[in-house]
Each structure stands twice: as C-alpha cells, then as structure tokens.
Image (cartoon, rainbow, N blue to C red; front, side, top):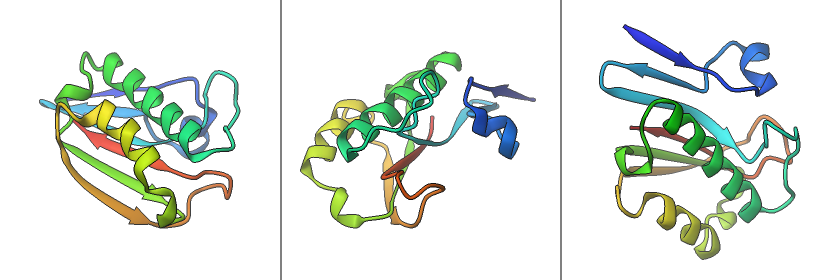
Length: 123
C-alpha cells in the first residue's frame, strides 16, 4: 500500500508526480527546490532557496506524520558546487544534525536556471 502526498505546487500535476510517497514504513520526499508553492516565487540567493526547500520538505514530512529526525537519506543537487559551502551547511545542520542521515551531493543542472539547489530525502 502506498499513500500519496500532494501540495499546491503546479509542478506536481504538470509533470505527474507527488511531493511525497509513503510506502510501508518509508517516506520518499521528491526533490524540493527553493520555489515557494504559496507565492509562486523563487528567491534569488542560495541561502533563501535552501531555507525554502527545507520548509517544503518539512511540510511534506509533517503531512506524513514525520519530521527531520526521521530522515535516513538526503541528496543535494546543485548546479554550482561552489554554492555547497558553510553558509548552506549551517542550514542543513539545523535541519538534519539530529538525524545525521546518509548524504550525497550531486552537481547537475536543475529544471530552471534560477534554481540553485534541490534536496530530496527518505525518512
């Protein structure tokens, strides 16, 4: 049995995916960018986008009756490896420091050039 979690983001229906999927005891949260689904805006800085991406992940985890402490795997995707630095690390430590999940950072292009980070988790 699987449970789908959706949000108001227009991308989910346009592309055909769910923000998160619960399957058994696991929660798979799709890659979240700094796009704010309420205001339909993307902040201009890596810090602001990271903060919003973490808010998007938190909302998905809460909808699945979970939180950051349950995260076992995280993947960071950035177009520019130089953006993966201490100011961003501080935000990630705040979110994932208790759980200390297995992690991978990948350098790759994102859906829009203005997107500076995408984060996906498994809890």
